[in-house]
View 1 (cartoon, rainbow, N blue to C red):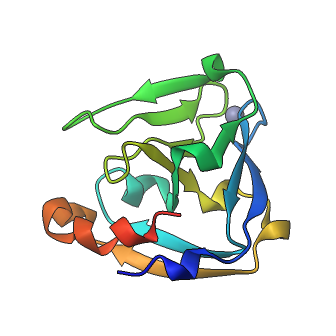
View 2: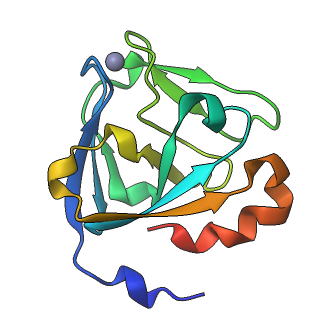
Amino acid sequence: MSTSSHTSDLVTHTGQCHCGAVRFQVKAPPDLTAVQCNCSICSVTGHLHLLVEKQAFTLLTAPDQLTNYQFNTKTASHLFCKTCGIKSFYIPRSNPDGYSVNIRCLNPDTIQSITTQSFDGQNWEQDIHNIRDTIQ
Ligand SMILES: [Zn+2]
């Protein structure tokens, strides 16, 4: 487990839902690690995770634009835009003290590269240690 790969200069990525009622910015490297999960909800939404710490993320729009959906362990807060239904970021079970940003909702201008890593969310407990070190 290494943290030295995260010392590269951070850039401010901006993102939004489809309709723009939810907008945010997130500080992360220009070279992103994307976690692709096969759990029941990620497989239907196509969410591409960028895991970040809480302080890296800033919501720019009013929190009341979001609806919170919870299921199973109810650790995660699946936040989606109440107007267009897009989940552009949320609080994941894998990173409850931070956020998972949907890379598909980021403005591509600030992204240099995306390296995809698979997460076996169907066997969450067995695989969780494999993605903890992708948190940026
Ligand atoms: Zn929206």
